[in-house]
Image 1 (cartoon, rainbow, N blue to C red):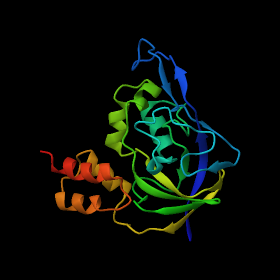
Image 2 (image 1 turned 45 degrees about the vertical axis):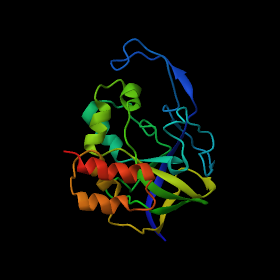
Image 3 (image 1 turned 180 degrees about the horizontal axis):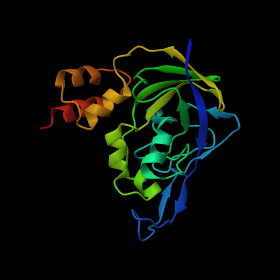
Image 4 (image 1 turned 90 degrees about the vertical axis):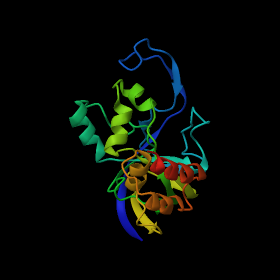
Length: 223
């Protein structure tokens, strides 16, 4: 195994109701979410279904086994802070469970298996940014900007349960599909790549959820 990164920070959150008024939600309409995740320094158990201390509010669109944990690149935060003049953007700000140093969408590949502490996780696909990002930060069009920059984060399933903690090395156990990066998947779903043959090849990746296998080809085929 080779070390390819560090688990810089671990975030947890449970469903809470918020009535924060901001430019995206000017009337302070109440919404229930676990998006406001906060760093946790102590060791936590990573289950097949979730990280200890975390729970999903929107179980209809999140929380499948393929989405057990969300990873986000630590290197994105200095860029966001500078570009948006938001010094308060810190790990967990994009709803991720794991903030990782040494990996980005450009280097994480579908099917990658990482060992972190006692646990092992496998990359299953990109994170498609949703409206919660801009409501969380009160910045109009932030969701579209996340998609445009490719700083989306990515999902993993849990291959082996175990104890994890911040500061642990991220070890590459296996990389079966080095040609299929998260960045490439993002390019297809956000209309930056129209190579239909490449889209069909990517869609054949067995770790991709069936929904995205279909959508990648459909989106690449759109006029």
